Length: 110
Image 1 (cartoon, rainbow, N blue to C red):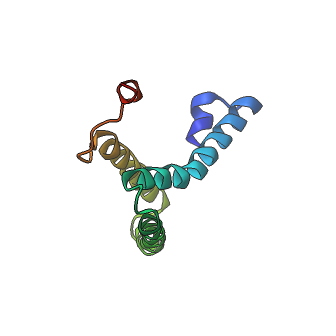
Image 2: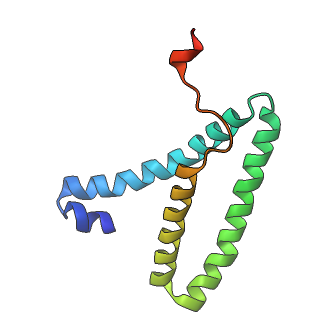
């Protein structure tokens, strides 16, 4: 629990460090699904199938690759590698424009 090292071992800090990752991880599928649906609003069923397929492939790949990584590198190195992959993914998503203009509600009403 890296959060406890940063926030402190008090009961409020520990509760926050424990609740925040759980909350964000539970919101991730909802955010990704909303993002996919907004990319193609006229093809919701196709996007739902794409979302489920991606999720299932990720679960399967995680099971296979995670087991191999733990066996070969150990638990600590695997956790660091997962953290680096998460940061790289976040940076790629943050810098992706996907060729779509950014919607601006202030100009839509004019």
